[in-house]
Length: 149
Image (cartoon, rainbow, N blue to C red; front, side):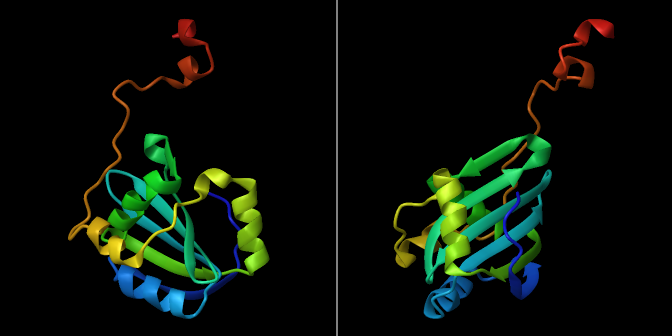
């Protein structure tokens, strides 16, 4: 995932207390994102965006399993990642940078989230959710050259 770098204003290990971090960023009217990288069956990355302290967008990616989940469907994955073994960073952006990210990919947008509902989706322990596809194509097959085996 490629998003503006911005200024790293916080970092630490995962698992971490997602709710207290969200509340703190909300109180500060934060613009930017929390990025997580955790190890499950593969390395998973998740990004949760804030605009003026309001959670506005989310995306989760697992390159090893060739999965990308955006918007409302990604929020539970992100909450799960907050309990994984890895690291997190809080990256500050300008409001304009956040607006541009969201304008270029509206599928990242979330419906309005009530903070009271977030603890309901945060698991007590991390559960790896991505796995390899049952059928893997060889490098030759991926390029339509499967007959050259």
